Image (tube, rainbow, N blue to C red; front, side, top):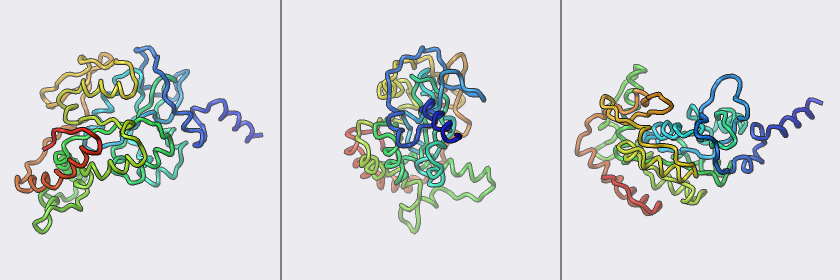
Length: 308
């Protein structure tokens, strides 16, 4: 009897507990017609009536230190977007993937039927396994990839690790000692490998057509967020709801903050940390090494970026 009741329960609530083989049908995109006033983010023990937890309709797949958190926070302005609160690392960490789809979906926010759910995990972009796993979940999912100048991304990557190690009272190294070994660029340094955008993009294009991957210019998002957000709205088939008044430049922090629902908020203080000065010769070695990879990436995605 218990098994029978459980079967009935899953049939009644397919959006919350559909088995993996039914996932693709469950996450198909629909036209969005919610009232603009409905909030995307809901919390508490009891879900609002009419909401459920659903697999994401779109995933921000990376890149690490490319602006993924800023992009997610800015998308959160849109009333027809529900965002996952934390990085899930479902498709790139074997131990999480082994927990199964029910575990993954339970980490998604409650949303209304006509909202879309978005999660972001920057580690997906550089994961060899993530593209195939995501495609197995939903081959028509829309992917968001935010990139910045790859050399600047390397320095930002180092900066984050540097401060994390300081806070944990662990020893730190100068960035030059990590970038160069025995007089040559240390291409085994993980931060450099993460900036080989063409290498990782080829893996994604084996599983998804380019039309399903929208690339956000992270450098532009920092200096002029609205045009980039409008492109994302169009890509996700969202009605235009994000406007210039949703952003204001914070002189103290040196970047744009968000104004929404009568509240103002900025990214965490760990964002926008000043980068260390890097030896110019070492930096030139890094840029020279990345240059051919950049041009290879341009050919793959059929567009160029203003990277040095």
